[in-house]
Image 1 (cartoon, protein in one colour):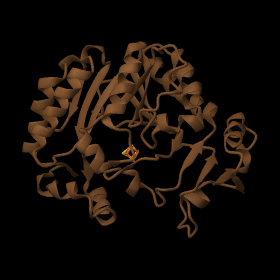
Image 2 (cartoon, rainbow, N blue to C red):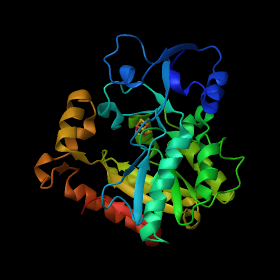
Image 3 (cartoon, rainbow, N blue to C red):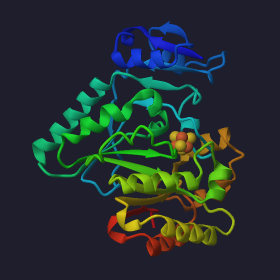
Length: 327
Ligand code: SF4
């Protein structure tokens, strides 16, 4: 294992904690993570990761219509996912998608979040604000190294009308269990039928394991979200997803779930071309019809999205569910 370590964050307590957890690692000191992250490297990167400082772009605004909150933001604290979903945008978004980074300057990232909250509060005292933590990583799996939960869960608790969502395909909730259920933190599990997990979501936890983790957290009073995305129109998708929802409804008390959201694949035309070039073996790409696009985005055909919409409307409580299928 090699850890590439930016020199100017070596003194931070989180850096030292992480280094202590992996004492056998070889340390290579570097000036700036981008010199490795953005380079075409010739050496193996699977057995390595970077500890770095995120210097800018800590928080970004979500696109309009992303959810039902008044103000929605993404923030980054790492770029690292151990899972291997065939549809994952990390595969084409970065030159070295196998390169993994933990940004250890949590205090600076939290300062940026505070500034965003203050600027919203100057104009709106009670508007609901959400921060999405996991757009570039599976924070929950990574928490055994990063201690994200220990830092960010208490941090978000002090802000009224604010929530942080951490989304995961991991059933490892060990690092959450020491906490009393927080009021401003939602742990959201991405779910798909087990056959789809097996075929397209490699190395992720099984559906059974995720359901067990969901019920454990619900029993302890946590806010738990269920995320059905991306829905994939596999062979006989209507019956595959119907059986899946019937099974879930038996195993999870939907009344105790904090929120649901449903969505499918959506690409810009440019991204679609890139992913087709990089992942031509991902069969679902061939079910997408570019001809349907009138707005620069491409999606599955309207019939498929309408079928999914009706099915999920039938099973999920309307008042807690956001369905984004552009129909
Ligand atoms: S879990 Fe999310 S981030 Fe990780 S590979 Fe799958 S889609 Fe990508």
